[in-house]
Length: 621
Image 1 (spheres, one colour):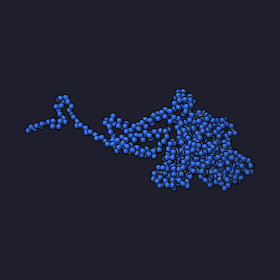
Image 2 (image 1 turned 120 degrees about the vertical axis):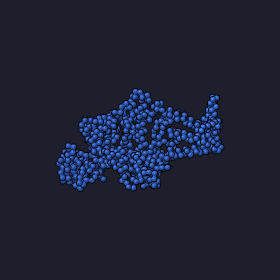
Image 3 (image 1 turned 135 degrees about the vertical axis):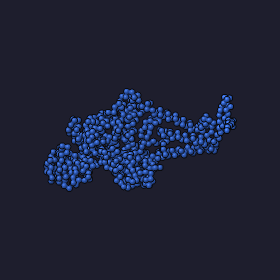
Image 4 (image 1 turned 60 degrees about the vertical axis):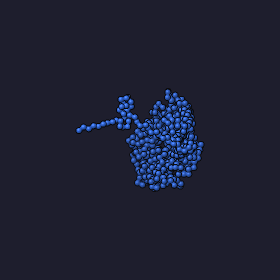
């Protein structure tokens, strides 16, 4: 059976015609595209402009509320703000006008017609930014950059006085934060609701170096439940005694960086000072303990965007929100200039004071700051310290700078010697068996010798010992369990090297003159002795007392004559916040002879308190 199938290509409605191939013509003819209906514009021209402006204004308000750009032509974020406003208006104009146009060229002309004013505005802004950036270019303005930091050269031994023990900060930021966290953990009514703001500020409070910080809410829900009362307290960490204190407020702080909406500190500043540029706010307290936020006002002094400097500060009361701008800030304020501004300005000086080309070719007298910095209280102010080294070498320092963080008064002290990192390594090698870590050093004047001082921390992050390293000869390293012991050992090492006279091995005069002596007297109830590091140590307990006083036979040979039942009077410098200081003398009533003693320390005893076991005596009332 045969089947026949008759295939007729013409039956496809002419869409495919094989005869066309024979004639050399196209084989497939697609259907013509459907014409796109033009979108109708919204309303008339006037209503469209009003709608476009309304949408743009709404965007601008939301963006300003969230991002808080300074309305200042020196602020880069201000130009971004304007660019975004122009872009939003253009998008709205194109949308409300119906996307009219024929082809790419037609659409371009349509968009250009709708966005003429924003386009001209953006063009003008680009020109301003280009000219302003060129006027700020360090290549053209190297001389101006090098003069940002007024700098004087000082004499270290003559101008930097020997500091008292109660002025030496013994904690770094990490140790202070650890102590603060432990202290807050002891307060059951706070620890579940609040956390500690990690940005501690070092200030000079009532003549002592401390770090202060605010609390913050644990999370958003805890903010909702506690915002009515505000943050109830702030923390003070004494950097000498290593004690943490939670200061409770009668009225909570309602204007902080941890707040939201209108009480957020950044938003509070921007709404009150819309044109000012600010550095990061820092938390401080005045001498009465009132909490404030110090908000340094930033200015650009070179061209449009260069030469960042500080011009006064706004002080915001953290409780009430009252704010005042001071061009000359009150004397109790300690930090107006941040470390990074000071270091940046010095680096401009060090790099460009002989011209821009010299900073690249030749590099004569080109210097930079070292990587680290530290703070020290001098008088009523806090000074920032950092080393200075040659740009071609980071193995040694050529000097250091001390800069007042309130006034920016800065002095350079020539002092060739080891870098801070080299000093840290020397100190750590001295106690390498204990694996202590050294903090970034301070520069002190000990017997007219520039000396690195640093704390040695254990694995728990707490200070265990102290070390002093000579800047000129960093192989001269001394350690001690107390600052007094460390300094005593350091002076004796200097004397043994012939650097100072034997008469200067005694502890420094400022500590004798400025720290009041304390005196205890009584009858010796018990004497014990032990050989420690090759020297016989005598431990005396007075009748009715709880602490044993430690005397070294090496420093006080006549200590071997003391007996139970002797009436003695021991005068010593009381501990500044719990740190043992050297004894002044010991008087034996029978002989009436004053004896020089070693540092007074407490020793373990049956009735000794916990403080005595660690070798620490609390100051007398």
